[in-house]
Image 1 (cartoon, rainbow, N blue to C red):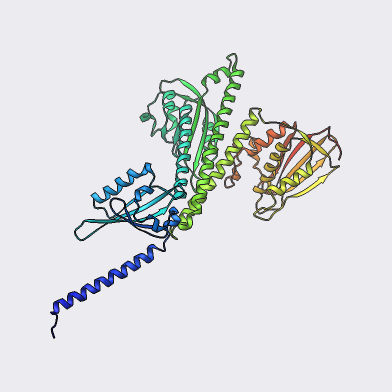
Image 2: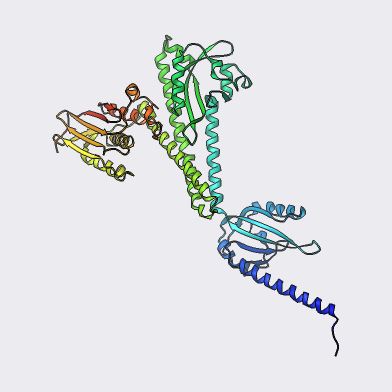
Length: 520
């Protein structure tokens, strides 16, 4: 009987142990690769596929066995193929552990999908490349969303460029220090950017306006409201010029301004004409028409990228469950802020578009005989039937109910605005009320709420564009609703007035002449 040397027995034991571990690793790898949603593939440097996981069916429509011995590059979009090869070649040359690539792949039905692949070169003990192991997942939805966001961003940038090329633009910090100006600002002021940035607008003070003028301006914008008016500035050489100015505050999470944007148009010539030059009235009408077209066109064109941004956010929100528990609340919070900002900007753009049409006299007016009580019930059901605080609108009628001649579309705007304000500014108080009074020659509508009311010193401005009372600071609004409602009442030949006791009661009264009313 012969015996193997001790060292041979030890080597054999070690060999068997290594083989066993390799077999276990292979079974584990196979189990993982065949049960995850990502497609796992192994291919040689020339692209020949030696292994594909079953998930390839879900990803590309091919069964795994149909991919083996095929070339991986045949399934990559021709426009992306060379880039993928170059990225892999660079990774191998630089001895990187892995490379992540995004590109398009061709499915069995000849359609394309965007994928993300993590490719890892595998080397033997001699540092010779053996194969490439890749994990590939479908990122088509994410890619479409990102492309949509980029397109929307590019469009917004284009609109911003157009505005920058047509208006005099300046940005300031909360203290009024100039942080940025455009070329038109430098041209009209005759100062360079270096001379302006770091200064306040006092450098341009013409001395024409009293201190109270600028105090009112700062009181308005520091509260987060938009200021509009005409300002006379002095350029570096001492010359004066008049500017039609709009100052928009940018608000932080605490609704405090962190930046101001001033948009100005040079109206020096128009101002001079208005003060005595022949034809001033015609030129003013032309200027206002130009402004209205500019605002209407700009507001309308902003809606397209806003809609794109909203749809993109919706797509990203649908995939938020894929994020970790740590990241998810942060993304949800930011998505919520974006949605709120989109809704507020959309509401503002809608109001600006309507106001522009009203001021330009382009709002169609098509009066017909309408059952006002039925119209009111329809508006209340559609807009105010499910209030978060559970309150309802109490409706009362007086007199003989009659059909009245109104434009139902325009009158619906009036109803939605006044009733909406009644709910909005009386949260937590009694139910708002609506009184419909039918007379022989007129129809009167009273909208009553028991909320915050209107401060006495601000009542004369309540129908001014972009004006919001000082006690509405924490309540969302555009400052255009009542302006629009008044002009819509004017179209009907009617009147609108109000009575208010602060923190007690507010009544808005609309009176429409209707001598031609017919009885039901």
